[in-house]
Length: 314
Image 1 (cartoon, helix red, strand yellow):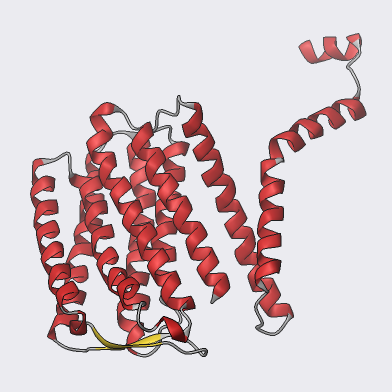
Image 2: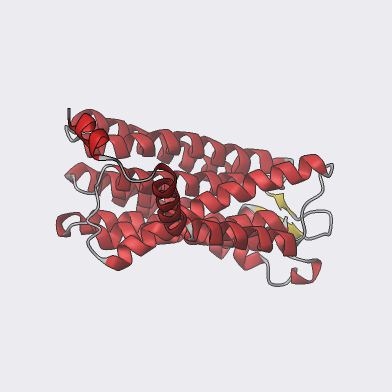
């Protein structure tokens, strides 16, 4: 679980940086809409950190772990509401729909925070694995029903925006968000609401899928030049997000290969940190390596003769 916690925290940082870059790089007329995207990344970051703390919590954290557990349920609600606000806030009906879901979400979470036993009755911390005793009652089904109503609303709003827009840039980015959110929303419903009735070791897949969708959407924004990255700091942030995303993919592949070679065992923290630092160093050196590659190729091929230059001109 330590590897999963490190992966979630790393992805959460990239998710937050994506939101900050989108907000700061957006045009003035898009700044209000981009604020919703930033809010979604903030709650996604808090969601992953809360789940990480729950997964790695030792037994002596029994008196303090309830707060991260409560915020795990709360953060999940506001991620989807903020994404809905980002999608439809510019339209009048969008403001109404977002406000309705926001009021419902705040009411739902306020009741839960006042009485957490509505969703779970006990936190079990052990060396084998941490879990909760779920309270399968009316409130739990209301909580699930809220997402069953909110997620289709987000997907339907995205479909409407894709059909309505004539901008190739916006359509490409929102198509990425649509596909990613449909997959991640389904995964969150399964791994964070339904499957925990029997097992808790896979609850990290939901937030990881959501954050992957957000980072992929951020990449599509860069790909279709929907952001104004005139500031050097925004360019640096974008470079960090993209390079670190490649590093995370490498770490996932490394962990899978390690588990396959050593029969399901997980690498130690020292090995994980060393590999992560090595891939980061390699990615940071990529511009210099590209320049070195061009220099070596020029040495090997040599300068073109006048006859070859004339032939090229012809």
